[in-house]
Image (cartoon, rainbow, N blue to C red; front, top):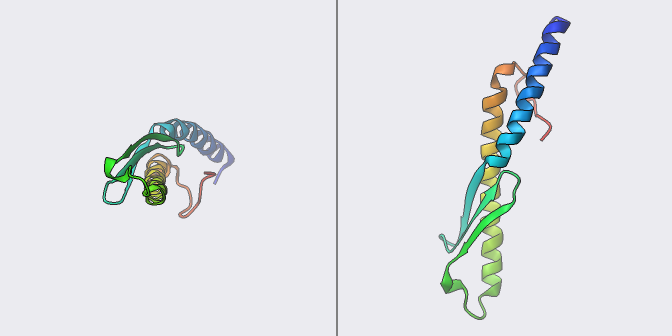
Amino acid sequence: MDFLKMMKQAKQMQEQMGSLQEQIVEIEADGSAGGGLVSLRLNGKGELKSLKIDPSLLKEGEGEILEDLIIAAHADGRVKVDQAIQEKTQELMGGLGLPPGMKLPF
């Protein structure tokens, strides 16, 4: 592989990485738990954008259940955000000819 071609690919990859980072912030995914009793929305940075709790969980003595459901909904949303980021990364980086299995720095 010649040096100029490598430099061109490196520049292209750098541009696409910048684009990817901008797009990651825009990604949003929903997470839910307890059959939808708790639902939330996360952005690509893992920030909580919204939270909805079914009123039936707002009874005295239900605090521990509610806490567990919020944690489970967040984990569900995080998995979905991570999958969306991975798909977007593959979409943008697919044409660069990187070796299979090469992980990018995020």
